[in-house]
Image (cartoon, rainbow, N blue to C red):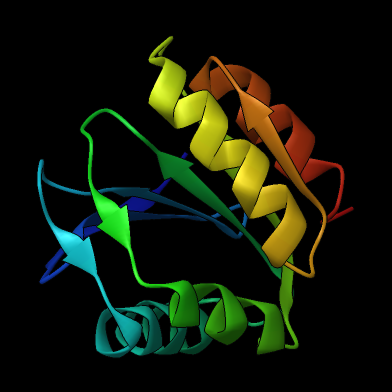
Length: 123
């Protein structure tokens, strides 16, 4: 499978040919609305149709609440998956995301499961 990897101010984004974007952010970063707009713009300029977004939480970081509104407004964003690696704070954070993201979203504990789920929204 072909992928494009880009380094952005908010971390590394992997753009897969199956219209799934995987983002890994560095430890301690605060993701703000400017970073969210940059991510959305990159995904929408790369993918021709609907796409899925996976937040691969390998590091702890924070997100401005406005980011959720920006992602929810994206017309072509089909779903949002969050991967938690067993840290309780990630699980709590993901529960919060379920309340504020107006897109199908789900918490996973493995990247493979998240990809399978995201693909189901793109078929």
